[in-house]
Length: 626
Image (cartoon, rainbow, N blue to C red; front, side, top):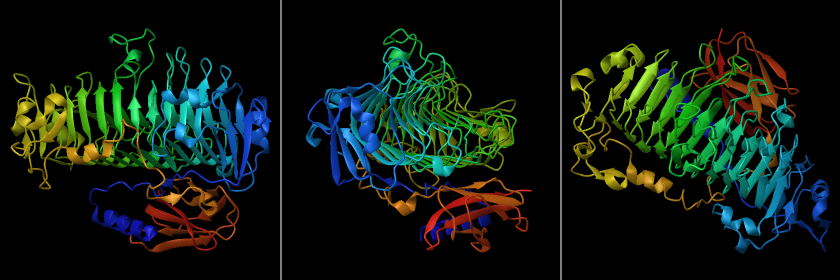
């Protein structure tokens, strides 16, 4: 039924040529603490293994085993987690009772450190490394730290695996306190180059560098699905990033990424000139960046603090990058960004259609709706549009920005909807490079766009927009007070019933974000509460669900190769056109089967991959382009 629904949506959007909305992730991982049949202990005395024998204990553990580690003890080695035969889970956790740890639906924090077993590798080494093919590991109630500066505290795949079958998969980090060296920092908390991986209820901090990008979580060589839910995430370069390095697997695009109920945070102690500055100039860039990703849901998060430092202050970047042409398939498509709060930033969103001067696939099908941004300075714009993004929808957002509303440059943005938003006018409102402001920019950089029902407020006595310079149904109140917020002084940006913009949006609702719904989505971010196990989803631990596949090249010309993580004998690939008709169907042999598609017309197809028993592995988009 899910596949049929996808085909119906696909048919409508292609045939009607209307604004195309993004696809949500095809799979959401359900993360429930697994039961095991066996238990082994690692401690100082009277246990199955001594503390110095931890690596031996992990190597010897059979699937279906819980490994209990000594609370309060530091394991000072670089530990590896090898591949095992079988699909039962190996659980690694501290040996304290559950009552001494956060409940299963709550985030861990540094106050629990004294009760946790601690992994801590020497300087310049990873504390934990998941080796090629490692799978079904569940880590819970642990502390993992670096001694001095290191590149990666935890490596889930090292980025060199060049086949899907070599990737780690079915990995869960749950209630793990991960932190770099407080004085020297670390480059990454988690290197996320894997499949079917969840990071939930974790606290990741002190990922910072003075000379290069540092992230709490970064991945570029894993297909997903990924679940990043209910975490505290600190990174000086980017708190979270997908892409930014060449995948070792040809045509790989990280996909099916769920990001919910996280607190993205940069401490002001990192900011030169701030009253809290601690004296080290950490290199700050962005909060969240996608350079190569598809089917991404970012919902109900709080993103706090970002400033112009090593870059220009934009908090959220959707900017496909090919590493100077080395991975020309890199793209950012199907992104849903909704019910998030951004606060304390020097800029808002930067959308780029493609890599500068390179012909990689353009960013397309992006939805930004019901988000709140406040305390946004005038250092940079609220929205920046570059290099020809397509099917970008920005609607029902409320932004309290002091800088200019938009800037635009490069190729025009096609199929833009900018509607029912409240934003600051700043100095210039809607402007573009060489095109002036207002209608000239809209006509030049957003041809054929839907641009209406926006409230662009100025400052009393400052610059304000001229309604004659904008399309109909634009309003330019002189200041925040005339907008009619409930209590702007205390950051309550719901509209009063007496507001002139209450119930006057293009769809009959109020202009701006639905603040009541947004507050509901974000209410548990700071308390750190989320019920992961009950989330609607497929199960993470199904052996049959562990296969994943890649189509290469994509876009394709005359031939298409199918790569999978498991044996393909008896599997089938079917290609559907925009009307839902099968235009090609073929049984597959070994991984790497090449298919002749020379007889197919140019355009967008859906590729459905099925097992021998008829069960569907997944569906991906395929572009035929000659």
